[in-house]
Image (tube, rainbow, N blue to C red):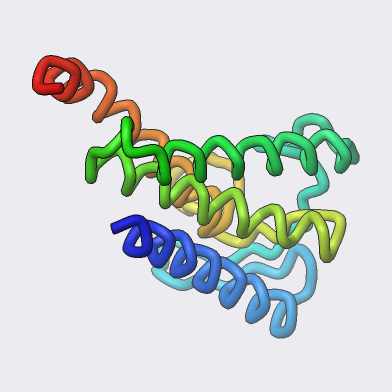
Length: 154
């Protein structure tokens, strides 16, 4: 069953890297293209920090955090003690997102961001960021609503 979750992670990485490759080869930094008017645009940015561009230029810190986070995700995915489909889907999304941004940091020394929400003033992000956010939300939902029930059934 872990292979299904690894496939989800691989799908996230491929989608993330594919869109990033398209943006880098077809857009200039700062160039904006409307995708869904008033809702979504592509706006190519190079982010050498973390979310909201904090800790700019601290690549070694991000390398370390990424390696540790990948290890933690794999530990929970492959540990039979923590088996729940909802939890594992969340972990798989987080893992794929971490790997997608980690590839950028290793290869480019920055993360390619491109998704801009036009209806709200929000930071520009990418598919990896989206997967991490959705994955963390799913993990929280599991922990808040289902983890105690799994413990009682064990």
